[in-house]
Image (cartoon, rainbow, N blue to C red):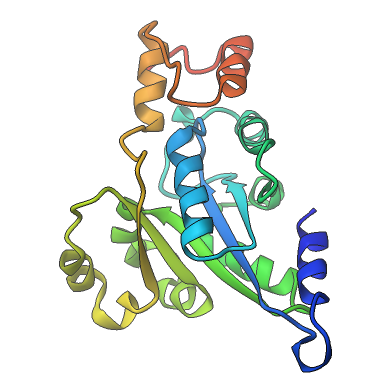
Length: 222
């Protein structure tokens, strides 16, 4: 459990070094469905930024997505659990799924800071570059960038000057770049391939594919 990991890290020192900072990565998203692009980005972020753990947080009701195009939240949660179960540094949180109302990143980040306030914790919010380019349209974007460091996962070659100009130099200081190697995979493409009867092998974990086919998800394009 996440709390056990934090408690172990915090108590691993002695004397003045008693409380060590726990570096927690939060990877939010609809995970509709989760795929290797998400998993590779999370693992690369964990290694590059020396994160102690990455918690995947499937969204409940995201404000910028069309609900009709999403699988039920329980399906998305269970697929995420299946996809991450073999990595001891990954965990999955039901925090947004069980919270009523729309899912906002600022509320999720604040939840983890409050939940583990007795420990020294630093939050790294992992998301795609497309989402970061829209961050100023999120609820309380300035607060988000004060509460955490944002890890923006992108393909090589992205123009960082464009991002700096778009969100402003002050906000840009809260963003760290991660050049992820599997971002060509997309949930939209997987859903369209399923609807068209095309194979999705090697795009996501086999356990997730089996779950999708058993539950007959994504039979309609979207």
